[in-house]
Length: 183
Length: 350
Image (cartoon, rainbow over all chains, first blue to last red; front, side):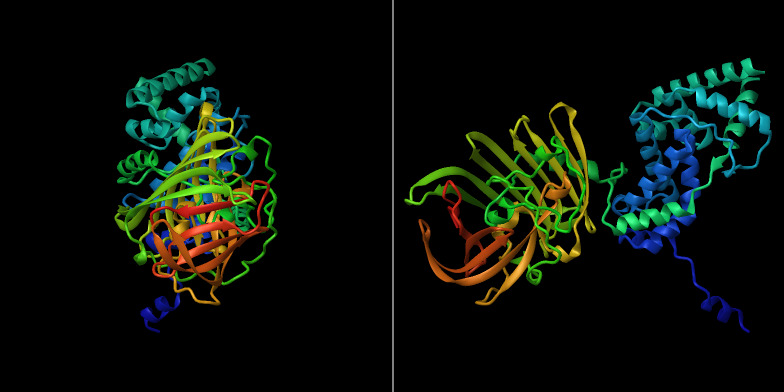
């Protein structure tokens, strides 16, 4: 059988712009597809910023609930994933600011673990990050884990780039101190 | 040494396990959206937006709200018609769309479907730029008149997000229960179908507040935006506008909504007037319009052949005199008098 006959009979994945267009129209299948593609990435970001599984799920819920209307403001210039992450970060940061967080120790079952260089170190680092004030934690996560620039962080947090750099410096100093004391 | 530590720290932080995104979550989202739940997200402004927003904000100062012709409609701002059950606190009840007429906003209308076919022939091409002035007054049983307010509606050819639009600026100065207030609305609609795009409404003062500002954006089948008032009080607006009840009109454009619509002796149609949408029973207000006759209307500006159109919203009924030559509503009058008489809206310089 010729190869093209096989490929043409298989459902083709939607390209991003088509998916966005369908999601803008509020189509459930498009929302589900976006969730399948980006849900885990956004969940990870929301969890790292909020430090709570429950809060992260709430953030993810809100993001997808408001996504069709929010996509009206998406200009398709940058990557869709980058845009979704910025929206998710904003929702997560709003949540962090607006409620006293109830901390969860995150090493329970049903967690997805990226390639792990040193399990013990990871646990210590998580505990140390959990002890950071929310303002320092947000900058540390966005810069060191998610790879945002200071100007991007400044825009997300509504602070200056300098303030972002200062907060990162303080976060690193605090983490060094905490982790040094544990060793 | 520090750099090495920071690198190890970074690697470890990236390796911290994260929860799995539950499959059931998206199912729940889809069910909630199907039920009409909406939420406004904090999104990047499009690159061209800041300038436009700044311009819009300035224009706000000149905008308008309220009123006018299908006042009956606004008067009985009922609610989202199919029984939204969100509880509304006494504080939130304050944030109901204002208007020329007192609102009986919480008398809910249990409408499931519109009472007439949707007004499907709105024709923005028939609209013309210009400035219109109106006055509102009470007429008591003896025919005595008491001024209630006056206002202007300016229609301007505009561009919004690169597309042709009409900008409608409405300013009303009103006296309501002894309180003087100014209501302003700046509305953008598509130039062809008159579909609402954005609007900003400001009322000064508003009840016990020095002001209230409503910013709305119409996206797909939803209204998004925010309400702000004294002391940093803010409410997010995120509501659904069911297609069944369209087309949706704003108060500011109501007197001109029938321009270009071919009326006839048996014509009837349904529209909905958009509320502030801060609370669930102030999202939109379905109204039925029906031609009930023809009449020549004499005004200070002349004598005009008009269609008499009855506007019904819940228990409220008004008669509109719609000029045959262009579809402009020149006058509207309560069909049933209230305690103060009948409220009359008259376009002064048609």
